[in-house]
Length: 359
Image: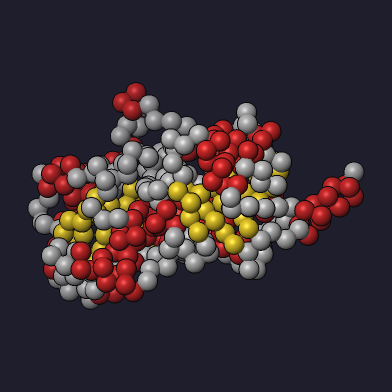
């Protein structure tokens, strides 16, 4: 039996793929953590063409990856049959659903893509002809590693050793120039600055705004003794109201940045010396442009930094000193609000080496 399985997987790994579709149609952080899968495929099959199926919102960000040749916008209002018609015209020889849905699984099947890789535990998993036994929801393995494992196992390849695959977004000079011009009345991004992102889009429990205000004041006062590096608070779509709330707690005045497209945000964050953020998409954009991140995480297992933390060397995470939980019960929990247990001094201590280098 073992010999038959070994022969089967050898046959899978011997096959060469030239036109591969990666599917990830959810949020910003999920998409950024899927980009290393494209880099892995480029290494496995030199000269292959990698296409990403994604939402219109994240497509311009994905297009900044050197490992992606084309991005197809997925209109969620389009039926599986309508999407299949678009995909069929590309004649893909393999598709990997990094985050599958029934509609997407049907679209790949109807498009007649010969190799369709997805997880084994969905009601629609029979639509995949390469099913990988993978549970993610309560796993403490990193999402990026789950993505790489799905690719390797689905293609019949051994587990990865040697090369490390990190999130990576390339910022062309003209994009940096456009971002600098757009922000010229707010901040000079060519001078040292630190980014603070107090929102999360509701993806996890947040560090309290009052704590963010105390941190900003502490950094600003410290920087006045050195080179007065700027503090910039970034706000995502729908988070503009946080400015007014933060200002009620602030004693100092940071710069404020909002209304950027995702590519502009990536260009902006690529110039930051470091970033403090809740668990959210912009945090992962920062890691992909090689900016040092201090991430603030809640203790819920589905949101844990072991799965969703900043990936790569040099980053830091903080989590309240309480036990892990599966979901937040709010005020019913004896540890509520546990995020307050992350102190300003703890966060500042993670930033302090950056401040010291400026002195």
